[in-house]
Image 1 (spheres, helix red, strand yellow):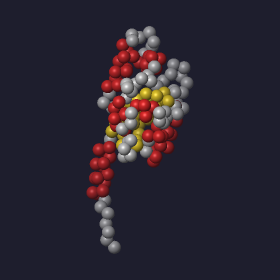
Image 2: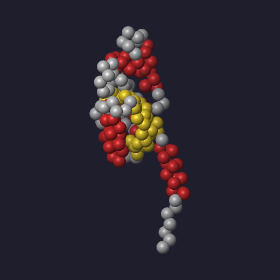
Image 3: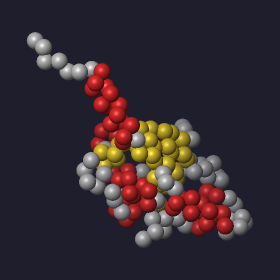
Length: 161
């Protein structure tokens, strides 16, 4: 199944350009979303994914249907849920136009996946708080593992008494 089936024509034209723009713009946006090497998702104000690309699904091991049936807290590492939801609330209340955080998602296999998540509000014409945000997700697990390894080498644990 195509993971962007929840993108409506209204959503596509709102994000890409006015409704009177050529239909290629909607196709262009959909192609960028689907073909991106980075994980991409569209969230509502409650932290529920309304659209997700295959790269994001591959990163966390879930199908698009499973992600769309979950909330962000469901697939976020428990220690990172509060911080993630606080950032999303600031965004949807217009305190911020976007945010970037390092956080962990729970892979379907049970392991943690470290990511750099960059989220931007999708502005609405009526200037009310946005009800959608787009996130771009980059896997930083290898970097985090290297940092942990490097820190352990600098601070060896001593058993001297």
